[in-house]
Amino acid sequence: MKLFRKHKSTPGLNTTATSDISFMLLIFFLVTTSMDSDKGLGRQMPPIELDEQEIVQDVDRKMVMTIRLMSGGRLTVNEEKAALDDGLRRMVRHFILEKGRSHIIELLVDRDADYESYFTLQNHIVRAYKELRNAAAIKKYGVPIGECDEEQRNSIAEAYPLRVQELTNNMQASTR
Image 1 (cartoon, one colour):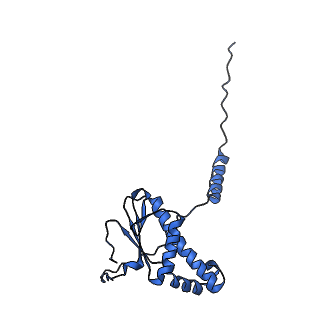
Image 2 (cartoon, helix red, strand yellow; image 1 turned 135 degrees about the vertical axis):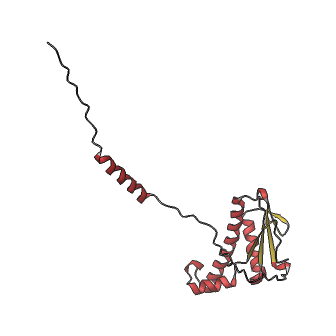
């Protein structure tokens, strides 16, 4: 007698639910993941005016604070060594208060300067303006600048205008 072996077939996996689960996980991660938007410096560049020529004006050098950022994070303010710390912010704030609306902050940035030093410098300058504007708003309106309405903020911004001229090391300032 011959014995026949039964060939057992391997049962297949039911994969119909796998695609549903994968799709639901994809949706879950898309919904729960936060998308950080890139933040940059709040600067508005002047529009390109091809027909008009640049007007060169003579500026009193006493009204200009020259901040030079060199490679390696080295910094000078009006040709004197300075550090990228809160002292720089205090110097900028004092200069703006002393010179008034006609001040100019001239930034000379070396092309080899690192980005971290550059952004730290920009942050100190912006914080100096914010502190001045906030103090002026509290003095004039009794509330911080963040709680002022648009008209009040504009009047404070006119009192302390952001007057920063930025140049690279190879460029010559038009204020000289």
